[in-house]
Image (cartoon, rainbow, N blue to C red; front, side, top):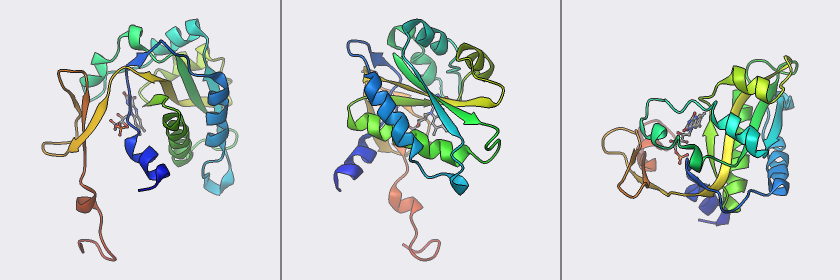
Length: 197
Ligand SMILES: Cc1cc2nc3c(=O)[nH]c(=O)nc-3n(C[C@H](O)[C@H](O)[C@H](O)COP(=O)(O)O)c2cc1C
């Protein structure tokens, strides 16, 4: 595997961050630049980015992350002491595209998260968020909507890929390491025709 493959393979979602170091604004600008180069349906490029570093605003943003999902592990990470100290909010310019921007958003988010990881800055892609409150907090105009947030920072825990044995829901071990089941690539990869191995 080459260096790019290593970066892709070793990126993991992190939900507790260490505040000893700050995420440099210049690197966040570079993340937004790299996001802007992602593949885009019809090359419409409907996405925009808000780089959030103001500590008070970060606190308010954190209060509007809805951690309650199908996985209770997420709530274990909802302690403000370990909150990300930087965020990139991904906005959609609805005057350009109001539906069908989601693949663009996924590709852009991945560019951000992989570049961040290459700098040892880790991330959490947050879709379960209070969009109404965040729109107000970030002064987002009616023409735009908040799609998602990417929380950024230096990791305060680890995450280890394990084989899928009993579903894909991740768990925490005693050392606050996430055990993250990922499907065996051989079980989901087919050659020429479905089912051929
Ligand atoms: C579209 C999308 C939405 C997500 N939303 C959330 C979220 O709201 N909260 C959260 O804690 N993680 C969220 N995640 C992160 C996933 O839980 C995480 O990617 C998954 O558990 C796999 O872990 P990995 O990123 O380390 O491979 C989201 C990921 C994606 C792709």
